[in-house]
Image 1 (cartoon, helix red, strand yellow):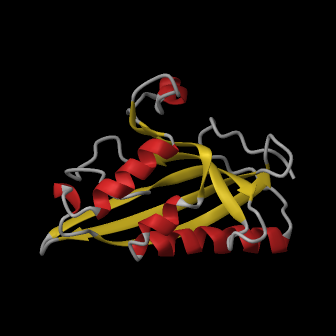
Image 2 (tube, rainbow, N blue to C red):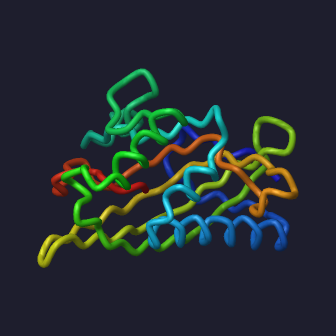
Length: 188
């Protein structure tokens, strides 16, 4: 297997991977989506390593010549740039009942597709790229859609943990350059 360049834009390069590994990674991502859709955020936050980087860079419309600059670099503007401490704080705020953006809570449905798996930079790590579609409904008429691509680094978990992996890094690249949603009060 080859390593996926997490800084690159989407690629159409075919990568051969083990069927069992592919299935295991997909089932892990589907289980994560289910935790989020069922609002089991305390269990979800445990999927992350202590040194996680959860990052949603901004995206700008660029000409063809400048397309390589359409997604912000790590030292540039981001909509979300969290570590485990801040992710845990967001979970605590959203589940407290005092977060105006999630009281009453959103109803969500996540679709994870086009999962590509490659060996990571460190031994045992996997680099996983996937596409996502997140539908959010709030109150009676409020609806939002978030569509994009995720770049995850997965590390093997302790066999007694219950899940085969923990998420060590997540880069979320939205297709939208201007978000019409009033807030990003859900996890992608």
